[in-house]
Length: 101
Image 1 (cartoon, rainbow, N blue to C red):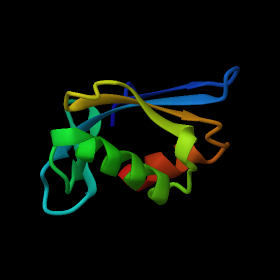
Image 2: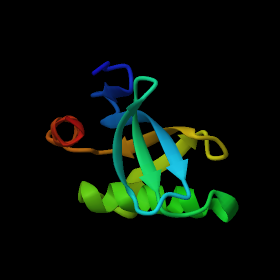
Image 3: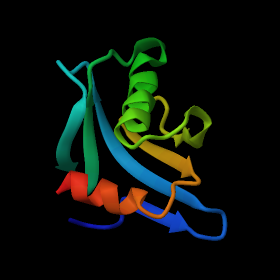
Image 4: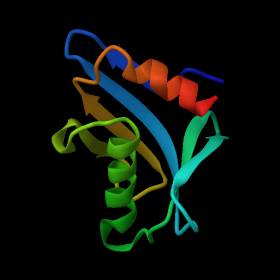
């Protein structure tokens, strides 16, 4: 697994993830890696930001995060997205890597 899909800034306590999203899937789930980035299948269409909303909701529920902690900063209209998680806590990156293995 390549580690270019995340960055952690300890000064700002900010975790940045780059992920690939596949909208219109039958259910929402992690689906391995695509092009070196974690891939998440999302059970919502890409129209009207439904896939983006479901993606953020999925990440929040999966990793016990609050609403404003998780935002899409790049790629809101594409399949490759940059997600920023503020105040992720010391164990979030470890949990994320374990989940993806």
